[in-house]
Amino acid sequence: MIFIPKMAMLNLARYKKRTMITAGAISYGLLMYIITRSLLSGVDTESIQNLHLYETAAGRIMAEGYWANRETMPLEKCFDPALTVPMLEEAGAAYAPRISFNGDLIFFKDPFPEDGSIPGRFTAVDPERDADVFEVKNSLTEGQWLKNGEQGLVLGHWLAEDIGAKIGSPVLVETQTLDGYAQVIDLEVVGILNCPNPEITRSGMFLPLSVANDYLEMGGMVTEMNVSFGNSSASDEQFAALAADVEALKLEAVPWQVLGADFVAISQAKAGSSGMVILLILIIAGVGISNTMLMAVYERVRELGMMRALGMKDRQIRSLFLWESAGIGLIGSVLGTAMGMLINWPLVRFGLDYSSLLRDSSFGYRIQGQMYGVWDFSSIAIAFLLGVGLSVLVAMFSTHRILRLNITASLRFQ
Image (cartoon, rainbow, N blue to C red; front, side):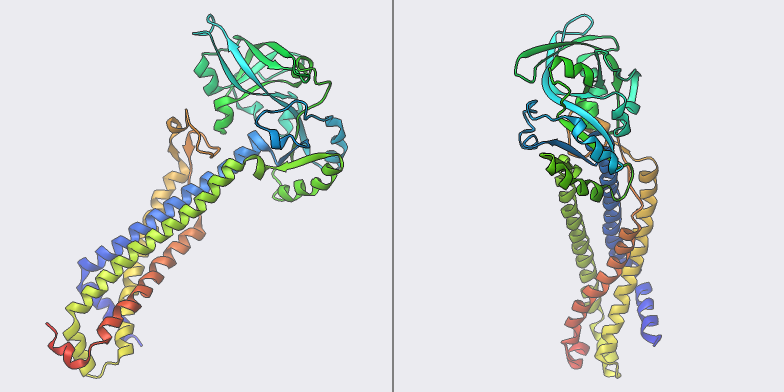
């Protein structure tokens, strides 16, 4: 029972260089797999959190047809928020009414560096109620948060930096009222925020709901009611349970997965990329193991022919090669997982700073500045077993070639 495993280990020690080269190929593949899975899982987790806290909450209630025409942000697709309050309070949900509308942010030289205008999406929020659902208020880095009745504007840090806005800078917002009439809102920059969600930092423009209600002539109507169930793990199910009640009010409930569809698409693509990484690991390890075993076969044909002449059975020879390949796989797996965990530690602790890449572009992920890894121990265990299992699997095919030779042909092999 122990003769063949012992002989296999002696053979590995006899061919140290070849053993370490093959084990190194396996360990490199597993290392890349562990690091890639760690970073992608970390990005997923943080993006979902930042979507909930700064952009979508658990979901959003809107008037019928608004979501289908969301690009134009039609103010006529509005509703009375009071209709949904009893239902939301009964469900134990926090809620934040908002008005989203298109407009042009206009600014002039002195105090700004240059005259200019920027088209964008403006979000009117209830300064007090919004903090029950979103963390935008807590992301202020300069100035103060909005106040009811105050004609203030809070900008994302990157946007403020691009146009040269400072606290106290006067701006104009050119837009249209609910009835389609041109309107200009005179505002003053009162706050600048820098939050973990790059979409908000890049283009966020917030003003008080009361000011938007007056200037847009909304009559107390809003375009959306954002809903949150806190950190509940069942928030998706709780929001889905509201759908029937929302439809009864002739409104529509849109979950965060639909609101953040760009991120969801990226996340699904990530799952496919993980599969490609696994495929590459299989190819790297398979080629390495196959090459090693075939070389071992050709170098040891006469030796193994002698063993067969002395009575060693084919299944014992096959077992010998399987033990050798398992040993190589074990060495590679131990090295790969150890190096992967060692490199992953600073990724989890400190992350990777790539804020310069996200400054002017968006990749769908809701992360800013630092990309952190996570400890995905299930992936580490899978990587370890993959390295050993693949080695044994490939060896099964490699040993078939030597066993096709008869004993006399093996002894005469040059």
